Image (cartoon, rainbow, N blue to C red):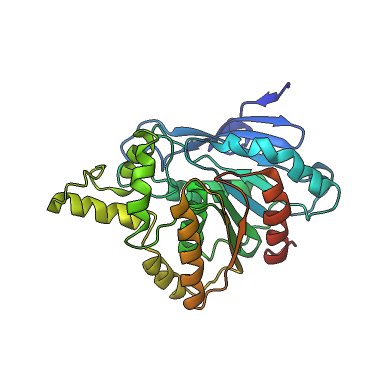
Length: 320
């Protein structure tokens, strides 16, 4: 595949946050400079690759479009969406779905994943997304630059990310779709998750510790006072939903839609339990939420996105 490469410079009137841009048909590949991820003492910004899928007719019209941001899973990157981009574009091209701009953001790091938070030991990913990426996309593309026309879609680590970000910033988003999200049932989910995580080596636990532990520690499970403090921080990572929901309910703006989708055969059963727990908690707190199980494992498929996520966003986002 041949890509047209354009190096963007401030002198040419282009966005200084972009160091490189490639265009191939309806797909843009952008190399974005982030100072939030670099940290306050860094001399050079971190470069992250994001993908922007433009809807059919974008280049020949003056229309503005709603935007869906996709947050990938752990040990992946923004390229995760490339594997099912074609069916999504085809559904829009055939008129089966309303046209959207799709942005595949990059939440990876040297440990395999950022969890889309301002890490206690790492980059400020939430600040990067909210303060850098959202304004950048609205400047560069013909978006409907309003929270009611902006959606969040995520898988696994990204499923946690969209729930976390959507509840924290409902003024910026209209709807949230989370597939197989990282969610703990209080006093149970973490206990069930740690033995499973250990089977996959240290990388996931190291990245989780960097995101949520003050000293980036992994629990020793030795019953010590120090270890109990570490476990409390870990519990609050994929947990703490009562506090998040309380803060959300105190805000003026509200999401127009929340949908949680889980796999009935998920290899991480604590995720299935956590999804049901969170949906039930939201309903009890008066927050409208949809929940749906499918006979799938811990995976994201083009069909699930095309047949479930896109119709959900069509119904919940303002399309014009």
